[in-house]
Amino acid sequence: MQTKRMTFRSRWLPFLLIAPQLAITLIFFIWPAAQAIRQSFLREDPFGLSTRFVGLDNYTRLLDSPEYLESFRVTVIFSISTAALSMGLALLLAVAVDRVIRGNRIYTTLTIWPYAVAPAVAGVLWWFMFNPTIGILTYALKVMGIDWNDRLDGTHAMILVVIAASWKQISYNFLFFLAGLQSIPQSLREAAAIDGAGPVKRFFTVVFPLLSPTTFFLLVVNITYTMFDTFAVVDATTAGGPNRATNILVFKVYQDGFIGLNLGSSAAQSVILMGIVMLLTFVQFRWIERRVQY
Image 1 (cartoon, one colour):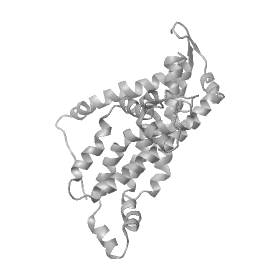
Image 2: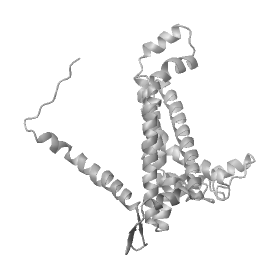
Image 3: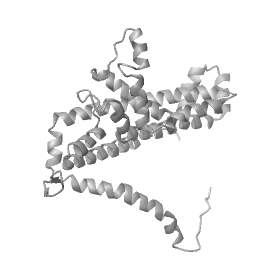
Image 4: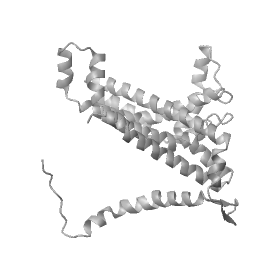
């Protein structure tokens, strides 16, 4: 099948059309990343009056720091839990809405509302509901015999930030899963039903394999989301506590850079975090994509 090539009368018009996107990429992505890499090899005083080149010293200090390694462990737990919870619930809701014949647009609209909420507002919302003193969910848990206190218990704090971050991301995952489900031909499901496959077997043998491109795309997006976009949620709910139990890598970058004014260490952490996300994305495309059926 041949594709029709677009031709332009002026040879400069294509470059002019992509110039705004190139400018945004250079100003907001390439330039800050280059500055972070440069600053990670420097040591500056808090007021920026003196700068000294220290080579890889900022990196070696980080890798020898038990606090940084603990933050790395916390980030792994947080990322896996948030991605699994948000994608699992989104898939469940998408399957439920896909089966609704009348009024599914109303359900879809109601489900995507949380995506319009700012991350900090979402964090404050869940902070109120799980507040040990006035939280309505804390009261419900107490009735069931669970003494909830995310300000003292690190496990409770981790559960709180995972729920808040997942709730914010469910809507995004839901839209993609629903679009993927509605693009699957109904004739395939009917053929499986005629062959005697029940709803559960039809889902795992017909529907879910055809959803694998959508699932793979969302896996990459959700891992990136947990690494970078969850700072406001953590800041509003637990502020990294108690006892650094929710001090994920992106929040530690903020604490060391803006609170501790250790700019070199903060820049080195940013570079490491960027490298981790690039490595995870490469691994996902190199090995997990092989199981995707396009």
